[in-house]
Amino acid sequence: MSTHREPLDSVLDTIGETPLVRVHDSPDAVPVYAKLESFNPGASIKDRIGKYMLEGMLERGDVDPGGTVIEPTAGNTGIGIAVAARQLDLDAVFVVPERFSVEKQTLMRALGAEVINTPSEDGMPRAIERAHELAEELDNAAVPQQFSNPLNAEAHYETTAPEIYDALDGEVGALVAGCGTAGTLMGLARYGREQHGDTHVAAVEPEGSLYGTLLGEEREEGEYKTEGIGTHDTSTNELFEPDLVDEVHAVPDEESHAEVQRLAAEEGHLVASSSGANAIAAKQVAERIADGEIDAPYDAVVTVFPDSSERYLSKGLYGEYEEWEG
Image (cartoon, rainbow, N blue to C red; front, top):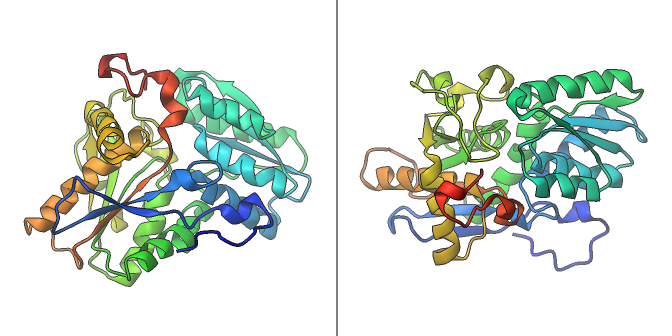
């Protein structure tokens, strides 16, 4: 894997080639590894799709240099797109539900973007609707729309997945990732299944989310604090391909919160709640492979830690669970 020891021309050249690190609280016989995406310049996995989607849209003519991209986003995608936009001669506008991380919105503005808030109770569906309304009002404007743009999953198929497989010499038994847009998991899953048809693929969502219903699993909809993954409206999650997924893990907020604190205290990982959920699900998959319940082609499980905990400190991530705002 690259260590970026040579001088680089642009911050965009630093995106990707993130470390793959062992999660030690996993079975010795079936280790879990996590891709540490906070090492990207915008400190999250969404830097990958920000660069990849904007370059693809410019190449296709969806928007021309000097134009505007308008994205409905909970935050990290906005930062990833903002990092890339100015370098690619584009303006960026983001539509963000109010309740999402203030730190993320501050960073988007620092990167030169405009942030427009929509009511929290209207969720992402209203943010998506408002983004398209704005695009219609402007000339030379387009909505990347991470929830439906195939370039989202393609970014992970072309970059994240090959990095994982190169690091482990192709010996990956299972892929586990949280689904917000589902782009990360779908890109990994498609690549993994091409390497070995029996690769086990597990999606992760917070308890209260409805992704599991897409696989016929029973779910009771409810509010959740885990940020960046999960859905209340599966009709907006157009990238999710049930045929590529073996199971969906619903992880309670309280367990994700505890795992975030354990990862920091015991393993030195300063990661957020979606990483905690991913770690819990990945360890469960590893234990089932070790017990023979899952017949995976190799004894290694890979997940992703999408971002850093620093963007959630104001919400009490490292305090008591009852005080965590989510």
